[in-house]
Image (cartoon, rainbow, N blue to C red):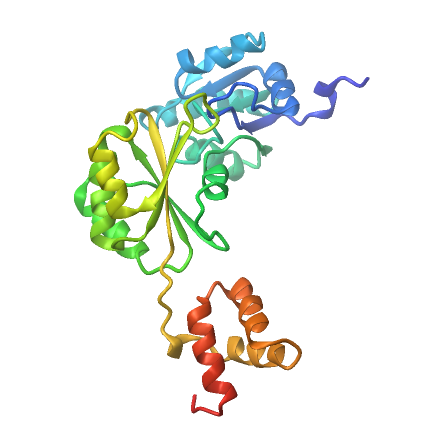
Length: 287
């Protein structure tokens, strides 16, 4: 068997780590971690548990937003002649975690940088939310500053696709009430401790979720993923002519019901609005 080290480029490797279950890490990720000169991480104490599980002994450098410049200076001389790994406490680096400046530095200096994919909380949350996910937007953590939080939610409320937010435990109830202010009583799924022993999902309308949380439906601890149903009130007059033409073409070969289903899948536009515009056009209505 060839030595993997001879097949790897020197440079920066963004390595995804488990989000809860330590078995959720790829063989490729483990090999690269073993071959690295050192590992840049958030919390060395946290990351050492994973490395100990797989008998990987490496020097760890702690990376935060406030010291990223210093870390870049420290690792820059090693990047061209050795393998350096960047990991986060859980999941993929840079997703609501530090590391952007380090990656940008490598790109600007033409240093090899690549991503080793793996565990993430976002995809399982979408898959298990029970909410349509033909399209979706990831928004990261709802900001602590109320003005920034209001601006983000205001900008997100009219988007057709599912909306993904992260929330810390101590702001969860406050954030859900803010979501109600902007999104109304939409469907929402709260995802807790994904891949862990106490994994839970709360799927309900916003009002019911607030009531359940107030009545201690589950222990509010750790970080949460929130999946909110997208806006489904499309203004029929805003459906573009190209979509209408495609729908009319499809209707020549399929029934109205089948046509609406097909166009709904392609466009994400609600079936109700597609029915309305289809009936209008098929009856010869004005544009």
